[in-house]
Image 1 (cartoon, rainbow, N blue to C red):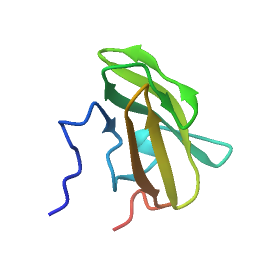
Image 2 (cartoon, rainbow, N blue to C red):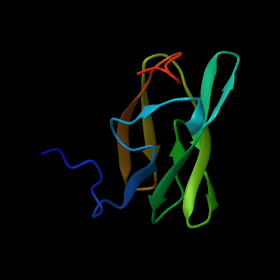
Image 3 (cartoon, rainbow, N blue to C red):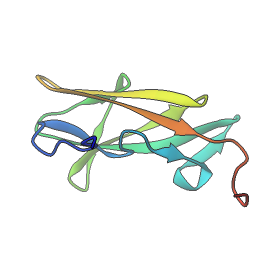
Amino acid sequence: MRKYIDWEKKTHFVFPIDGDVLNEYDGEIRDGKLYVEAKVDSDTPVKINGIEAVKKNGFYTAEVCIEGEKTTLVAEGANAKDEIAVFTLKKHIGYY
């Protein structure tokens, strides 16, 4: 079984996690793109997809754009890195 969160890593995503399927309930749609607040647990300051994250409620957070069906998110700190893939499904709310 795949270990989605490695709690022993110095830097890891708390939201979203690897393999998450996101929709408009997870963030905000602007210009046809989904924007979510990514949260990372880290001992040191990080950048999330190149955006300087701000410490809020114990986590480093940054608003990132989820574009297309698959997006890779990368959190990089002074000496640690985490990389995940997240997915989106367009116009699926209210369907099954």
